[in-house]
Image (cartoon, rainbow, N blue to C red; front, side):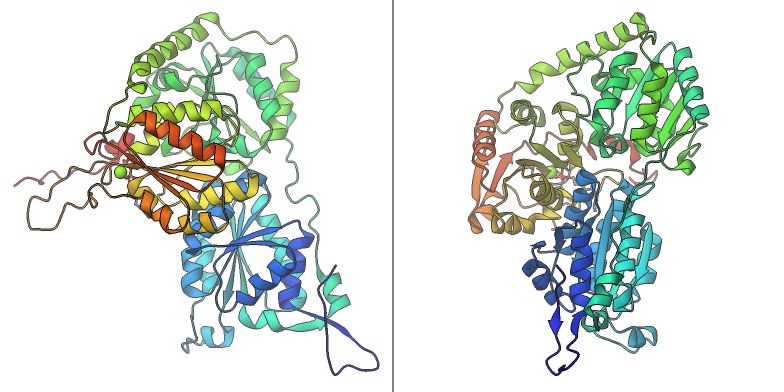
Length: 576
Ligand SMILES: Cc1ncc(C[n+]2csc(CCOP(=O)(O)OP(=O)(O)O)c2C)c(N)n1
Ligand SMILES: [Mg+2]
């Protein structure tokens, strides 16, 4: 049903009217967008109220970046664009970081921002929150549109939805100037102007010749490897991906957010033998994974000297040859590509060589065995391994729970230690390694899935979005935040060699983050041993109550920048 207003003075030919506010809401609903994340203010406060009154769930945040991150992860989890609604200039800029991050990570998202009066903005006459938002957004997202007339709202939203989800998904900016909202038009004409987007992300079928080339290469491999990226998780082609891997018997390596597509405990999972398989493989098939810095650009030391050939499955043709030559590009959506590969493989595909599979397995078993005792230590204060050993069991016992993870050591070690069992259950810092996704992702995931969320956060990482614990309490979300409190960034032990200020990487010692949660009526717990931590998390996950656990970690346990310390530039004249 369209929302309508009746013009009071209309008499004979009484006209049903609608306006920009109602058309935006109707257009969202028509396209199945039932949740919006945002922060209210001029000119979108009433839009939020009216959307809520019209049955859209409007989740109000404390900062737009977190609302934007919630929208972005909603897009990743549902394949529908997550919508973030912000005010002009500063609110828009706060949301823009999340939009740019969504674009980099290929998450479909639409940032809708109110904006100030075009006539004044364009003459730079100093309007309230003046900013040429469209121009600023353009280079940071996949597409950017502005709607000036109420009659174009339907088309504007349709274009935004298509741009966000079709082809390689990404962030879209939609600029709605304040004046648009109160523009009035005939309700029938308004209803007709709306567009229900049909087949927003059309299948992109790979060429049969590309499939044949890929299979020929794969068949010739002696030491094949499949790498699963977050694109593979996004595709929701879980059964076919699993069948492809199991029928070929090829070892697979999941990227961080590709974890759980097949369980990390699957006999073909090479996660615990990563450095060995990257070096030794002769044919590598990338499924929704890019050869960016996270895979050392497909060359150099981590890939070893053995010659390699790549098969790459990606929806974006320009991804091919981005870093190294791709011998067999397969361009199409991952679902269609994997199903075509499966059809080509048929029933008689030769199993991967026992020698190769055996070598990978023995390396993996060695590494797992080496790690095992460290995960069982019950030290106090905890080290990362002891604390993560406890959380690993929590997820093993609750494979449906969603794990959000950010930090440096807290991220890198959790990624390796906590096994995932189901697809799209691990949400983290992604391509940029950005801090600040924590509470936004946790809230978005809880709202979209209704599943319990465990957010494992470095104390620094948490600080970027920490105020949203109030939002978690306000909406009574089943989120358990565990803060790995080591008193700082990487370590809590740095000292400033000059002056009286503390070192740049340390925080107030022995802070009690659990008290923050208590301030808003949630459960706060201070845990000093892995056993205590496990008990507290179990309780939180079972009760579904908003909980924050301050996990006391040895300030000396971490290392600089976690696993990527090598990326720090070094001064050669550091010590005079
Ligand atoms: C937006 C943003 N700002 C800064 C950084 C740099 N950075 C990387 S990790 C990190 C925090 C690491 O500390 P913490 O979260 O406490 O994890 P720990 O290593 O101590 O476990 C920072 C600030 C970043 N990645 N993103
Ligand atoms: Mg820390």
